[in-house]
Image (cartoon, rainbow, N blue to C red):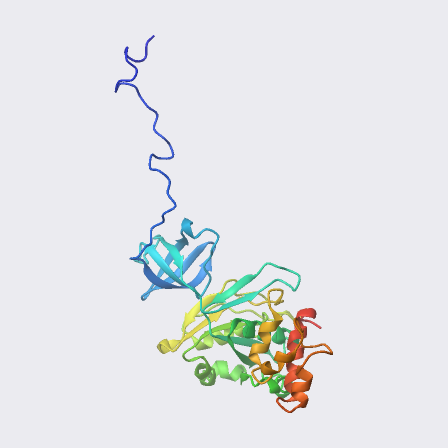
Length: 333
């Protein structure tokens, strides 16, 4: 039985449509010049919560971004539904250039970098003076990461009602760190004005072990509350109650705080030791006479002669070398 007429080239011939479409492929991508600008507040199971103007918009990453991902603190370009209404979804089509990136690795042998936050300019290192006990090596590692990322470090000591802060502060006296000491009464009475002064005008990322009071402190600073946990009486370690980073505005638009999940390790595999010296402007000129690839902790290091000539205090060199050596030590040592 003939399916077509005598002339199969005529219009009565049925042609199966191309399932992939008929438009030719092109490498040209839309520029999205009309995209709205926003800031990533948090990332939850692949969905990005972005602040656009005064609305929180849920968005997904556009395909053209490829493997490039957006993290909390990123400035992004967004297209699509900007209403912020329930069950609406926009697209993040561009991640703007970052001013800073705070990274860490799982440990010192892991080559895979994890971006903690982007575009912060201050790092609040939160540690308890007791329950759990402070771990200076962890503080050292966070300081190295802050210096490498170009962030201003801020040492926040909690639970001063359980132990005095002076012994720990003496350890970091030569680093000229900004610090603040808090206790339980400060949280109960709202006495956190000193911390707000140090955070005003900054985008501050909060890092620390679980159980040190990091999220409790953040709750006292902002209006939005996050769940908190307790320290395990057996292990002396805190429980992870913050599972994702979240950017929160300070009242009065004075700045931003970014609460991050509690960490039990802070790997520095990605850190170039030569960049840490930049945080020591009194020592950096002395490295000009160092041999190439100097670790600044070897007999040929020129910093010893620089300090001996009176250009810097010996304690400053000791602090630098202690920080550089953290890459070879475990946090609990």
